[in-house]
Image 1 (cartoon, rainbow, N blue to C red):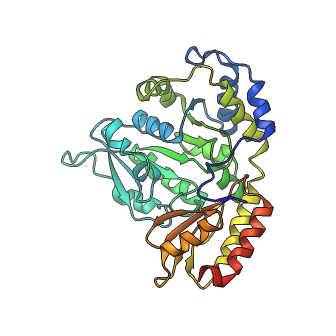
Image 2: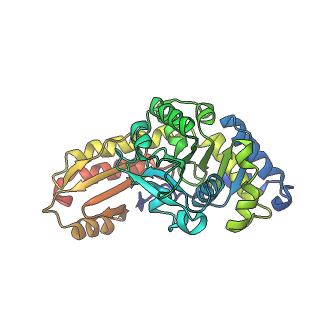
Image 3: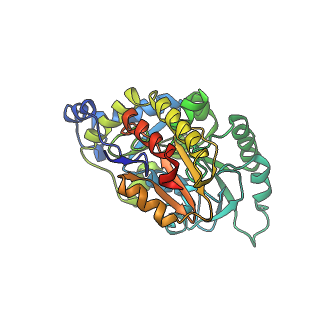
Length: 343
């Protein structure tokens, strides 16, 4: 039995999702004539109470489009040092938009309003880049699936309003945060100018992300998507999977969160493990003790067909998802409890 917890992106469509894909009504989305893509965009826009939405192939593309829509070359955005837009999007901030990043030393990928305020360059000081955008990430990837306190987001929004800054949310795993905190998508729609939500992570669709936002910004979205690579034609087949995922896979994320917490509790008691970060959603990050041979540890896992991610020296990650069954979970818990195997 293969257990793959490298990411929640490795999921495969369920039979029911495949049926939704096969039965999708499609057209040419570049002409905005694909009814299923249009339905997905309308659905997500309504969920967040936003003016409009646009379907993209990937989450990196939605983030990069949003940054380009918010900024001009030579300007600067503010983000946490762990931010996906800085660490995992191929330098796209500088390549696509000509924008630099002011990185904040936050807590588990989350920054505060005071930190944002301290990083804003004086707009009349022409020697420094003009600060124009703040990018937040919720949940945080490198921060171990941590969720923002919404009251802090409101404080950051006030700073942005006071200084004329845009506010973008990389919500690749926002669905997880909404389940964990019992917040409403419309709460986020009232605060952010643009939000990117992913359909291919915890929701389990084969591909795609949706960018939602306010009309004055989203009016630029079609052109920017074209610049970054263009639109898809009969995208409705994949959009149908996204609609099915939102309707059927969103609320079941509670199971992923529960299993991640149970894994964390079990790892706490393993003598090979130095530290386990707090678990709020479906991402679990832990550190090995210095005396543990990391390669031997990984080889032991692989020999037992268990696959996880390596984030750097001694820092490892597991991500639970809907393809990780209860049977797999019990097997892995028992494996970890056998301390002699990993110590």
